[in-house]
Length: 126
Image (cartoon, rainbow, N blue to C red; front, side, top):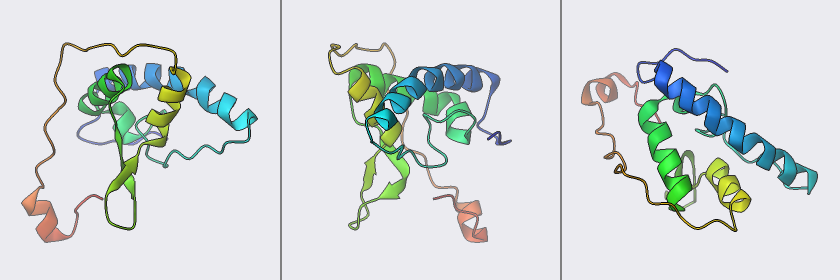
């Protein structure tokens, strides 16, 4: 899946390819054990998605993975509206269960500010 999007960059794509390369063997191992791949279709941990090519998202995903801090799915929610944990991120935590957290030198990005112009036109992203 390759999409053109204003946030996708060559640097984001390069990081995304490597992140997906690290996650795929963990997903395959879980599937061999009978666990389904529950990543959403646009998961940041799935190669070729928009989030997987966005440098800001990749920096947040890598930081969350290394620091073992929750990374939330942007699509899947509980009945109360709260975001579920990202299934790709959960796989990384299962795959690194014996690792100690690593502190990254950068901060998490701030939450997105809704684009009021797009919201008015009905183009708001989930």
